[in-house]
Length: 248
Image (cartoon, rainbow, N blue to C red; front, top):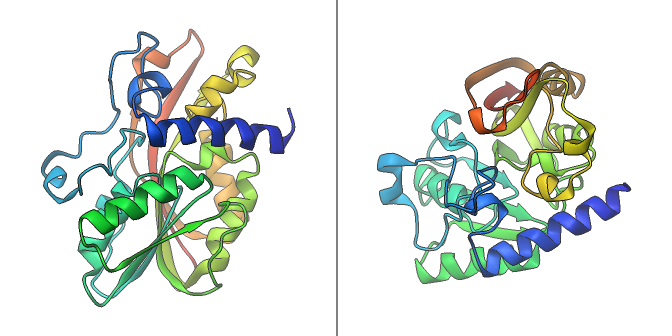
């Protein structure tokens, strides 16, 4: 399947989610086949900081928790959706910083802006764009975050190249994403419903980390991981990891 076709299918799915949350395997990035609402992430006490309508249950981690965001930072959230992680980051950067959210789905950008306006969030900016070609200037960002989104990009190496481009020297990213181990059946790889739910597009864990190295990053570390029993096969599995790396 061609990259453009993959992106079109993903965009259609997430446009629907922006208008009516609750599909995509129960309102989560990857959930059960029963349709029950089973988000993968519990924000816990952070839920008090999440603006109304921003959390669509689509994440597989909490990248802001490991991002080391400081007051005054410029933060970029790739695949921002309704803005849940943008608003958490906005609390961390304060009035002297700003957070940019990028998403390729117009309906998601509209939803994020609406959430910002309703909650009077002034230090955020939402931009329509592709994470393989970020609408962000080079060497302009202190921290990049992303939550269960790079799976959805056909060219993941280009995404990491773009992250490297926009980060300042000494900047870093904290990304939560899905990876695999073992031999994923081709039937899963070919299932676009699963791709749009960030399962079929998941890379092997070691290959994923190698792409990061190839893009020039150093100090690469996995801050946490979680395997999902519902997505295990006899000789394969799907894991959520949160990865941090620095631009030297």
